Length: 130
Image (tube, rainbow, N blue to C red; front, side, top):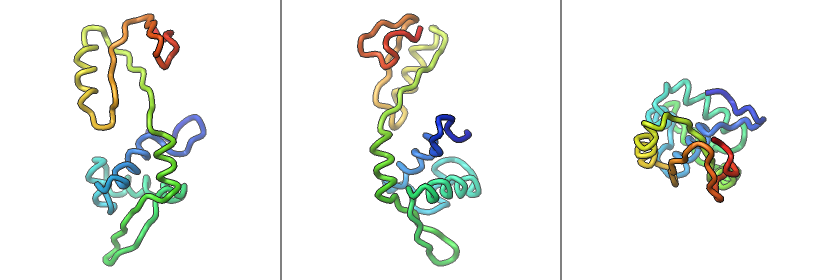
């Protein structure tokens, strides 16, 4: 996944890494690679982006290990990006199955199946995404 196109150098995948560290699930590069399912080299690239942005602090341990902590700026970044809306188009035959699977993903706060021409007054797309 590349960098965000709107000029934001931090991707949602990068924020997921920040969340892992902030929640105490990942403290070393080996933890990060394992939890994200990527190579240590790829994890290192993500860590470098977040460190350069000032969102992760690094403490060097013995034997070439590093311990990562979310900085104050990283905490502010997570607080500013609590919710993202996804518009996922699927065939109506699998809409309910897709919603069922999404509801069970960590971090997803709500899933609603919308029909074409949605007119929900609370719809984040203004009721016009059909």
